Amino acid sequence: MSISRSKVAAGLVISGILTFTFGVVIVFVGPKIIDDQIIKNVEINPNNELSYTIWKDVPVPFFMSVYFFNVLNPSEILAGEKPMLEQRGPYVYKEYRQKENITFHPNKTVTYLEYRQYHFMRNMSLGNESDVATIPNMLVLGAAVMMENMPYAVRLLMSATFKAFGEGAFLTKPVGELMWGYDSKLVDFLNTYLPGLMPSSGKFGLFAEFNNSNTGLFTVFTGEGDIRNAHKVDSWNGLKEVNYWRTEQCNMINGTAGQMWPPFMTTESTLPFYSPDACRSMELVYQRPGVVDGIPVYRFVAPTTLFANGSDYPPNEGFCPCRQSGILNVSSCRNGAPAFISHPHFYNADPVLRSFVLGLNPNEEDHGLFIDIHPGTGVPINVSIRLQLNLYMKKISGITETGKMSEVVMPMIWFEERGYIDGDAQKTFYTNLVVLPAVMEYMQYTFIGLGLLLATTGAILLGQHRKKRGSEKAQLPHPDTDPRTSTIGKDPLLLGGTD
Image 1 (cartoon, rainbow, N blue to C red):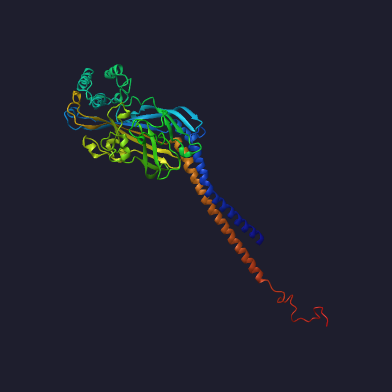
Image 2: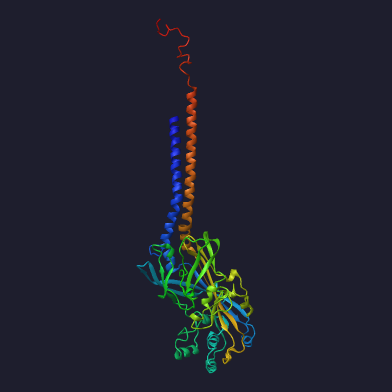
């Protein structure tokens, strides 16, 4: 029985040592296995079912919400008073994105075109596309600023042309027409006699060029061979840099295409990406950690320097001519039109911009942009990109349509593009990249703990066994003291001895 117990104890010690060793091995090998799995899944490769599907067709819900700044006092603005604005919306559109013409190249890059389609979601909108709104007429007020330095006679002629086609300083039209385009005899006239002047050859609308269009020909690195390059842009429309801006730094095409980023992020990481709609690269910075549907995330936000002018932030000097901080002059990539982009309601902008108009109320929750990203994989979990389109307008001598209006950067609309992982994509992502790594982590500590328990139990049993053996041995009688075997005090003759 004692032999059996000693074998059991020894077996427990050996099992404990092996289990403990296995747990320690998992501690060192487990993270590498997880990292290798992440690298395998993040790389742009048709064999990677999870990430490739998300990258190719963006199956997660994606919506664009549009808010109009309805002008309440157009006549008073022409008389020089402050614009009074009323926010209308949101008008929500489901956005479908799909990559086509996907071509892989030997230099570990892939080229593609991404197409966008928008479908109005009445049940998610606060209003209908038939709602009527009044906004500045970009055709008139934009052209007026563009012609400011032209001969006076030319300005008079342009003003006469506006009158001939019935174009005034403000438009009052249904939201759907303002969004996706309306017929304009003036646009038809300009396209006929001044081809190339207008960005559109069809209907004129704020988003007319968005629907059923692509964002340009992107060439990005797949991440094969160096996962740090995954999704980074190699070129856009064949260009390594754009030519919209005044400095080489501002013209650089940096970061990714804005959908996924390289994995293994830290709190020191940033999110650089190139935006064709903004005609420039932008970079978000880390703000705080968080959890979205059980998935750990890092939140990245726009720094206050993103739209700062060159005086407040010298690296942005190349984006000038600038006005106040908080607005970006995009006229160089909008056919010269005096357009500016900013955060909604001039959030994070110079307060003087808000003092020129009435009806704005900026706050971070409603107007700040952010991306919640899973730091281990670089996959966005929750995204909200919010931008505002503004028109610089003022009185221009010779163009009577501008009246006596004051100089102002006028908000026209702001929009939010948002998306989040849910449904089957969320479940698959959560299982493969959150649950399984957590299980592996728990396993390593379980094996280490179990190994220590088994080894300790076996050692205790062995100790008890040896102590018992020693005690039993100590209790056995000595041959010289045992009366049955001792020769002390006995007659030698009785022992068979002789004299």
